[in-house]
Length: 196
Image (cartoon, rainbow, N blue to C red; front, side):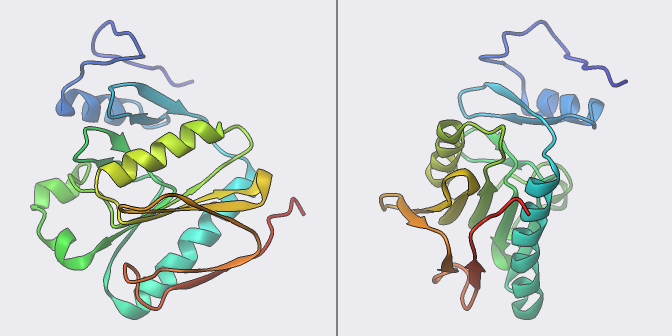
């Protein structure tokens, strides 16, 4: 059984932890998946079920294969927490950072929680996720500099596309998505999600 060790008494709706304290909280509790919103709210995320886990790795795997061929950047799993410029510490289900931006980080910034907003993120709604909460998270990404983001919503058979400076686009599944100019040549065919 794991224990949760908080370094101080806190109100979980607004936590005044330094970056080092938040990092240490995560390191001290490796069995917990913890994020922190730009408003300082600690978010403890439950593990996902088999269907969501399979969908997540499939979507991230497609991104990885494209990047392996193009060598244009670095791909990150859902275990990576990014220290966003807007103040949040967020962990997308899959993320990509353009290579020169990644290489501009110091070795220490790469070792800990990278102090960078990804160029591209994928979020996948599981059965236990509140859609409005995920939509706020996607907006936080865009506000922090993410250029393109896809929020997959299997429950409604939709994907929401987030772009810098544009309104959110909602599309029905199945669909072929394009990485546009952010991920040149990346195409993702997404069929309807089923619970087979």
